[in-house]
Length: 340
Ligand code: SAM
Image (tube, rainbow, N blue to C red; front, side):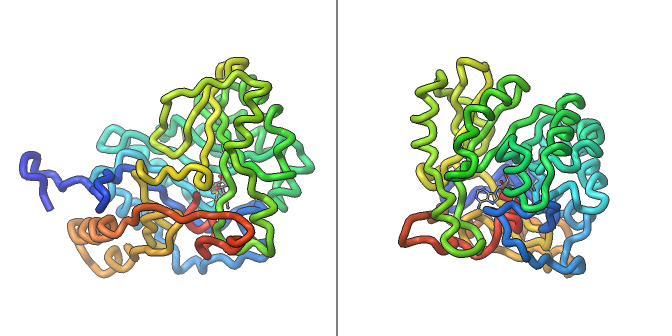
């Protein structure tokens, strides 16, 4: 479908009038950590043969860019554990300014010492690093396998490479809620923005754990306001976080509240998995297979048509609820499949 004036493909508009300009790509479902709220301990991962090659991922990303995608975020699993991922990052980085405005990634930071400079060279200007605690023992308990030291070194390497770091912390009842002040102060001192995220009911992680973990952020913010001067801002990154300025540090503090405040009305994104499945909503099961169109010999216009057909099915929003009557996952897949 061509736009009559520009002879360029018409942009992707979903059935609710939302322009889809943001693609998140989970480049692998594997991770070097096993965060307790994200994965089960005995996760089984996809056979390597099911994965799209880096070239296929690049081709699909190219189709999205042609259709108006301005921002791409690589995620996972842990994106930096995918073999040769820098090849993809460099190729996508070369698209910045050629339709793409921003290439970024969400990482657990474990590989940043090795990759920070390369990322900066490839044009990555901002990254999100997931870090739920600054306590080394708690970090290992939460990630099951991770070590805090290398992550902090990785974050420092990213900062030294000139990449703006945003810290994402999942707020977990009775786990890290006693550390929020410390994290705000640390991020303030380091010059990082900090975003707290409500735990989402995705994937089976065992028993009643979700309810035990869930901490409504509306309550957290009210509590923080007793000790910090928080001023609401209209700063938006195109994502679901709402930001406050912390008077004492000058940094921003964001809250992602899929449970206490549904933000689907401004959703501009879709999520591609490493097998070429496109999820049009993080919290719904409907998905489109883009691997078959990619592999059945179609030209780029044919692949773009498959993308367009998927966007036409984007649902209005998710239905996340966590309470005593809803302890089962809202969707069976783990966050590591779609990358959050
Ligand atoms: N490995 C990378 C990382 O750690 O950032 C990228 C993938 S990870 C799945 C992306 C984000 O999802 C992390 O910030 C993680 O804390 C968050 N996450 C995972 N499971 C979640 C859940 N059930 N609810 C809320 N956030 C979750």
